Amino acid sequence: MSFLNLSRRAALALTAAAAVALGGLSPATAQTPPGVLVVGQIAEPQALDPHAVTAVNDFRILMNVYDGLVRYASGTLEVEPALATDWTISDDGTVYTFTLREGVSFHDGSPFNAEAVVFNFERMLNEDHPFHDTGPFPLSFFFSSVDSVEATGDMEVTFTLSEPYAPFLSNLAYPTGLIVSPAAVEQYGADFGRNPSGTGAFRFEEWRSNEAVVVVANPDYWDGAPALEAVVFRPITDANTRTAEMLAGGIDVMVEVPPVALGEFEGDAFTIHEQAGPHVWFLILNALEGPFADVRVRQAANYAVNREAIVNDVLEGTAEVAAGPTPPAFAWAYNDELEPYPYDPDRARELLAEAGMENPEITFYVTEGGSGMLDPIAMGTAIQADLEAVGFDVTIETYEWNTFLGRVNPGLEGEADMAEMAWMTNDPDTLPYLALRTAAWPDQGGFNSGYYSNPEVDALLEEARTATDQDRRAELYREMQVIVQEDAPWVFVANWVQNAVTNDRVEGFGLEPSFFLLLHDVAKN
Image (tube, rainbow, N blue to C red):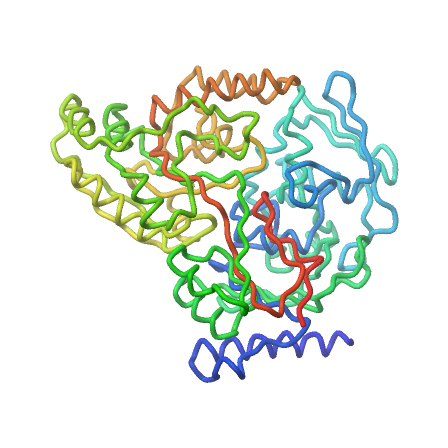
């Protein structure tokens, strides 16, 4: 099929979906074209530059446009070759040498080689790089241990680390490690995020703001041409609207199905997909100023929230109560002796009284929806009621996802006392290192938006990321979890089992523990 026909079919999919949204077509006439998969996303992407974004919503698109040197093997978080065919690691764990895949080109026609890899990492890590200011690069923390990256051959690249760093290969498989076209960055500069070019199974075709991102099949993909002709990613922020469009045939895949809507997709016309993964849903507490600067008030909030009721009644049993900052999906590092805070409103009131807090006023940031945010408004409302029942005076402020991130990520100081948040991570190092260390306060480039600080936790995290023995790493992470739970910088709420729904025309679809949406092997009749 020609490129022109592909574009027309993708456009037809958009037209049909828009008509459903406006009520102009019946479900029978709203069927999307064969070979074109229409995905109902939870939000508009922030950018299509893998080095500049943090949300799984964006990653679901990016993982189909780009490749990394390595990737996660299907159904696991184990690393396997991708743009690198093999690699060696020095005995001291500080030098990684990768042999690159021959014959691969970026979608713009420029060659993939060692110089391209060097460009990518220097762009993220070197402030003097001519295209460093096209960022920001919020997850460059992943590669902060890289001292140098060199092209040691046309198709060989060597990373030298300042010290051993256990998560390095796993972080290379994460979207921050995806390889972008240097030629495209040089052409578009700060606008590269709207004009992406990678080596992936699909190449970028079009981005219609607040309407759709369209990608088309890359017939020359090194791992074989995809079965689909095109994919249309549609941002449908309202969960009820997303559900209605799925039922009507305006979209073929719906991600993050509200628990209350799952029952509508029982039957032969749809398939419900579920997959556990490393996810934690929590409330960031402002430990720098206001009521939550007192640990007793933070603990009171943890005792006040009825997590069991939230999991069972709001989330319809699609999650488990969270005990601490590490998801149980990281079984080797999870402290299974840690019990969640019990629901104990009397204890919450006692702690507030001990802290001399009478009806503390709380500003609570809630998002309308976002990556892994489950049912954030319903959860926020339930949490508000629980906190008010023990004496807090809680005011909710609600924001669209990208606006919400723009208010939370720079830090809660002078803004709010509490904010919803969810993380899906690839290694037990990632979330605490980026969001619980003192050196990860927002003014230092991290995501510790509540300004939590404990030197003992800092030391444990620093040692854990450099330990080469996994048993020792596990011991350090388990010790960290006990301290963080006691310090209560967050209200630990839930660990989610992700879900999605496909219609009966979609074949070969599956969810990944990484929470990425990988569409190379998906087909649609």
